[in-house]
Amino acid sequence: MEHLFILGLIGVALALFAWEVVRPDVVAIGVTLMLLLTGTVSINEGFSGFSNPAVITVLCMFILSSGLVRTGVADYLAGLITRLGGGHPILLTIAVMVTVGVMSAFMNNIGAVAILLPTMFVIAQKSDYPVTKLLMPLSFGSLLGGLTTLIGTPPNLLCSMALEEAGFKGFRMFDFLPTGLAVMGAGVLYMALVGRFLIPARKETGGLTKQYQLQDYLTEVVVPEKSPLVGKSLAESALRRETGLSVLRLRRAATPEKSSVPSPATILQVGDRLIVEGNLEQLIKSKEAGPLKIYAETKFDDRALTGDNVELAEVAVAPRSALVGKSINQGHWHRRFNVLVLALRRRGRTLQKQFTSVPLAVGDVLLVQGSGEALDDMARSPEFLVANRLEHEARDSKRAGLALGIMGLAIASAATGLLHISVAGLLGVLLMAVTGCVRVQDMYHDVEWRVIFLIACMMPLGIAMSDEHTGTARWLAELVVQWTGGYGPLVVLAGLFLFTTLITEVMSNAAAAVLLAPIGVAIAVGLGLEPYPFLMAIAIGASTTFLTPIGHQANVLVYGVGNYRFVDFPRVGALLNLLLFLVTLVVVPLVWPFTPLAAR
Image (cartoon, rainbow, N blue to C red; front, side):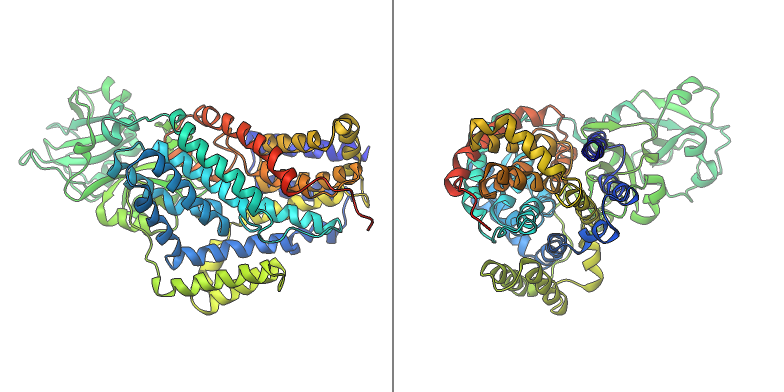
């Protein structure tokens, strides 16, 4: 009965992860609450995840990564791409993936992608190479680079911690390097020689308005002589509330060759021509009797919306943006950012009607109109990633060497065994704060708290599956050994890798590692073997999320910005997953042989 309860809880959690009805961290909180309410785990065990060394280490890595970003170390690495890649497609692909891979080995994957993402648009423009062929390798390279060190990605740390909790010695800092380099090397070569041909070019023509299908609902209207709007300000006219139209540009009858962006206080005059955006059905039905008349059956391009220091830009919602979960209306964008939001694109689909009331999510891409100064401010804001502009938040480059040294000290302390990885990370955070590489007020903003809660609240599920509680992990392990053990450990390792890869496509890789690492240890013990090769396969499988754009936040981010379609990811990722599966089956047993379990 206990086994059925645990399996049912896992099944419900997996379904919620896949359907995205509820945020993953909220699902994890629900899992912990169910375990506590049913008495499956004690109060101390239920909240033990928040004091787990792996969680503390992941938290510290967010802050240490921030130190490298804020001091310009990461930007320097980003600049290498242009110099190394030149204009050759193969070299560009390799340069992008190697650069982001090196960054991801020592910092958060999504952070590395966010830093390099604007650079991809500049490189694409300079080299006349489709940006879509750079963004997917960027995301995939960040996932592969994280496989090379203990701190490169949370699943590595969580698998190591599962070993320690089972009484085995955990992985050291560079134990992942041989297998990680082999997997990453295979992935880079595949993308450079094969994968880039499978990525659609989709060089957009017609400008941003055509990409967002704005030409279908932008038109020019005129204020007629007897219109009730004459003499009223835009604010008083309540055009948006009454007709659903937003005024983008205004042309006076006296100077029709000039246009400007009106303010809410602008007084409407007879003959004013307005470029408006919105649902035009009502206006078309009453174009002779209404307060406005359609001036011409005209469709507009980027030039009609820009000029006079007014520009168009694409901005993506950043991973740790405070705007996540808020709609455009709730965010008061025009007042806060001095821009007008023209369209919203989510997962390759442009939302045109009532998009301003849709809660924003990480990776959502918005087409905005505003002054160059306003767009510069957005580029420097931590809330956004301005895809087609290269301006960044001001960096404190004078402390770049210091931040690099602190990061090196933390890594060296952990790699040599002088300090536990969690202690080394905490020491690095303290030094970053004391030296000013990271401001104390920024430290808490730079932590991805949803990931922290997700990991910490999924850990009690592993405790509940232990022999001291329900024994579900051992029960599942015995079933796996019974079904596959006769075929040898390599088949078991292959099964663990494939299962981890598949469930990671619909749930967080950290949650997948928390769930499967204890089962992997139990299976190895059941086979009478050391668990290291099996845990290594789980760690690799948890980071090879190439089949869907929702398997990892890095994929989500480039999915929206790159205007990919869902099928683009399995088209490119299926062969890559198969290749890395074969590489893992060859390399892991060579580096981590199937060794009989030593008496403990």
